Image 1 (tube, helix red, strand yellow):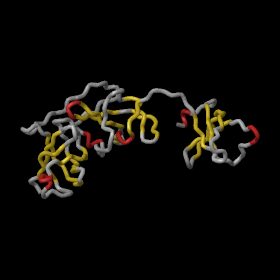
Image 2 (cartoon, helix red, strand yellow):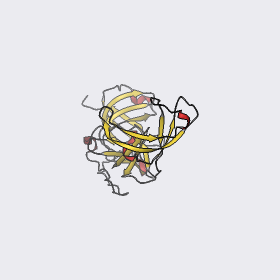
Image 3 (cartoon, helix red, strand yellow):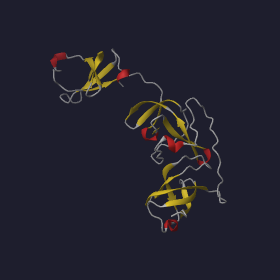
Image 4 (spheres, helix red, strand yellow):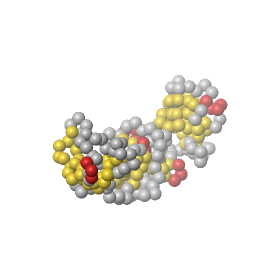
Length: 238
């Protein structure tokens, strides 16, 4: 935000001492010295002071007006920060997903600006359903580079089960009314990297004898309601 403040920029101030009133002015200077403790810059604003109503020591809330420009905004929690790059998870046809590298801009409230790497109309995973912890979690799944367009790499295909289900192995993180959360290995049949996510359970009998911490093998499909477990069993090594 500090880099966008310019001398001459319009400013509007409100004061608790004068409820319902606004004072319009402009930025006259952006001081060069940053405050070390707060890492902020000081801005000098000139406001009309008819009748001397504004006095030294008063506190005001100031809103700066900048020129609007088009931007792509995504939920901040949709951005996966690996430490080396910033990614979002693209939602592709057929229930597939692919990471895409993005360049991020400013963040405000719960939204973050995307400067490059996404196009208007592309769909991404916008919630915390996917929890990818590190760059290593994305090994074997090619991320779309910035400027890579709509081309999507085809992942190495692993066979699906006879029933058309995708299969993987993982560890039970939690069991609850909303489903079963599993930290699982990649699912190359549908292009999923290793991640932690929650699966729906329509058959409670699947959970018999299953507890938190168990290593399991499972199979699922993806109806409209979301990924749903169809088979679940403890791994033979347990």
